[in-house]
Amino acid sequence: RDATQELLDTYEAQLARSLSAIDQTLRVLKYAVEQNGPTGALPALEAKGLLPPGLVFRVEISDASGRIVASNPASKGRNLAGTAWFEFHRLTRDDVPFVSLTNLSESSHEPIVHFSRRINDASGHFAGVAVVALDPAYFTSGYERSRQGDRGLLGMAGTDGVLRALRIGETVSWGANATLVHSNYFGFGVLTKTTVGFAASGNSTTPYQALPEGSVRVGSNLPDGSSSVKSLLFGGSSM
Image 1 (spheres, rainbow, N blue to C red):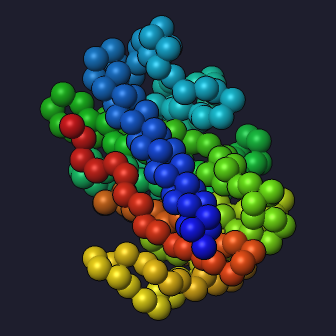
Image 2: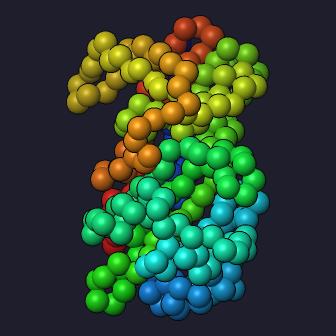
């Protein structure tokens, strides 16, 4: 049982580090735009070795109209106007990170999830968004088949209950709805027993998940019947 809890804690720590690193990248992007302008931000960061690897992360900066003015890897002709994360940042002054539902990329047709923050100009008006996008499988890459077997489960869901990433054995998926039944609590809301259920659903009426407190959930199931769902916090207001 101790080994099972250790594994669950390891997955939680891995996800917390990943989310923290993504949000730190968003903060650095915002700062670079403020210091170097939207077109000079990425070259300045690249010169200092501060851009995340392009094979894993897609970084984008848009202007107030949604037009992508800088990206790594480079992309042409993209416009974020009308996307849920762009429109929310445009209409909301709150400086908080947002994470989209997992959708298929327009270019590669592969699943992708977008993290974003609002960019303001010197007067505090909306000037665009900073975006970090990646394959949701990144969040379940720590799955260890030697320890979890073919029926273990590792997943990340938003507070809306929609899974951004799910891995069971060698199968990776996304978009299902997770039913989280908390049957017991200990102390200050720490979960001690949780039932995790999943309903296959590829659609949702909510096109994005607002995270005013930067909250997501990570769930794990092990072959011995142990399961865990924990809420993690990241982001928050800018420094």
